Length: 432
Image 1 (tube, one colour):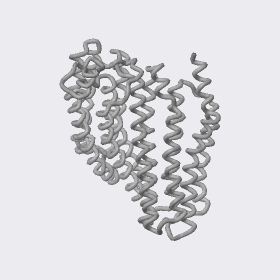
Image 2: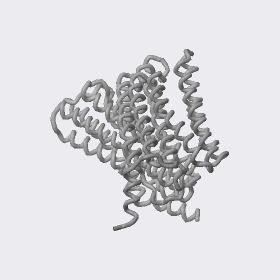
Image 3: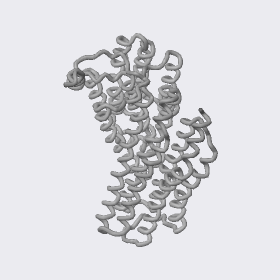
């Protein structure tokens, strides 16, 4: 019998308190733990709710207010997730206290999710998207991290200063968010305060780690965690595709159009997945961990754009069921977030590789051509009236628009596989 086996079983099955001395930042085999995967499941609901609310309020005509509330929601959801990921990468000892704190944070995600409809409704009526329910959820999501950072400060003397700094930072940020919800000031002032708080939260970790040193987070593990959340968010595109097709089937039964839309939605989801993983994140970050900071901030719009693609497909569902939106509006709701995502993939590659290779620009432009066409085709045919499933012209234009949006992801993948990967290799050879 392997003499190491009993010790491994004891570690895996017995979760009493363990020292929180920090993980090995250079560990190459580091992978995501089951408790991290469980934590991520709550974000499926959060992103889905944000996408649902965006689709609902854009469909109702509150485009500007819906986009503002959506940006606020994506920041609140994603930034709390990033803070947990940062801590867990450095100090996840998987003991009972860490697990309990994680479960409490999951409750906070659910509470914040309940506040999202209130946020979008308030924005639609000209009020601040911030509300007490979201703030309470945000506080529950993040206050447990204060205790965990202080615990790490006590048990890891080498990183005590940065651990205490993170605890103070999170506490101060929560006080700021609470004040923003309690103080009655004009909407413009509140929005300005929210933007200032968000910018401060983004800038403070970089400044603290440069001054006090960084916790023992693992760059390869962080790259894996971000890729898994990307997969979860892409799952929303699959779910939204299913909803759009079911709505069309309910309206007129199975038809070639329903099959094409289903296939296009799945191709789009697969293409977005493929395109994201064309960025060699783990390989580069393990070699140059200092590049993690800008790379992680680029994921804020990435996560938002992917979830917004799902919202675009939900808008298509609304158009089919309620006959309230035109094919042109559906095309815009799909093409704009896909274009934003493609551009952010290009930007993320550039900041990760620290190279602004202009040879990637022709490929980027080729990817954007089908997206522009997806808007121009219904515009050229004057498809500005509410969508009618019984109209052959409307249905044909919808199928063409969705197919063209999916084609853009195919162009991105095929172009990179044939040509683009050489640029990445060339940049790495120049670095060496």
